Image (cartoon, rainbow, N blue to C red):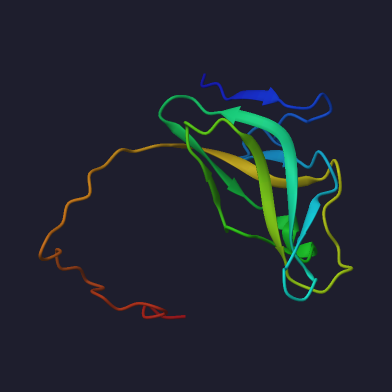
Length: 149
């Protein structure tokens, strides 16, 4: 079985967990209430950053994707980079930065809350090749809703 190595950077950090054996992702937890990052112009909070207190090393040939949990819709938060990608070579602390979407006060995560999930993904190596033409397809170049409702 593959192993994901996890190092606790703080004694009270929580290891990633799964609620069900067949879940795709492991829940990750906030080690603190979060650090609010303000804008420079109007003094309103713009981001809140949560530390998991963990460093994580996926197996060789894999990387980790960091997603929000579905419960994020109950909060005034959006993961700032949509999906985080932690390459196999990254060994620093795992942190999640959320954009605050409403004026404070609003509902935000607290210490010990599940703040996201990790998904292990096999890395496929490929080569970028410049071409003059691409193969024809049924869809062609139509986009943004062109396949119907």
